[in-house]
Length: 114
Image (cartoon, rainbow, N blue to C red; front, side):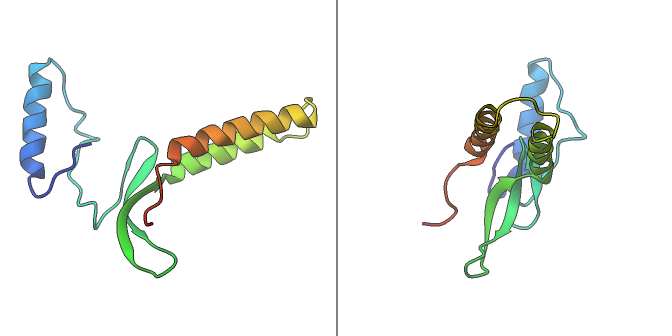
């Protein structure tokens, strides 16, 4: 991801040149220019783009866990909490808490407003 203020096309071309000199290629299917203040995009499990601040309804450019990331953690929790789970409740609870704490720590980068 490259963040730019008005020079995105030039930054993309520069990146293509550098990557080519390194003997690599950009994945064109995953490469695009987005205006983050107006459209969303996913990167490394996050969705970046416009978000609504629930307290006052104002909009800001921010990041949140992507829908795919949320679906995956829900599936992991569901897989862990099945009736066939043979561990004791403290064991199951501790494993579940470890999984959720790790997920939350990855997506915890601070508050959008103070």
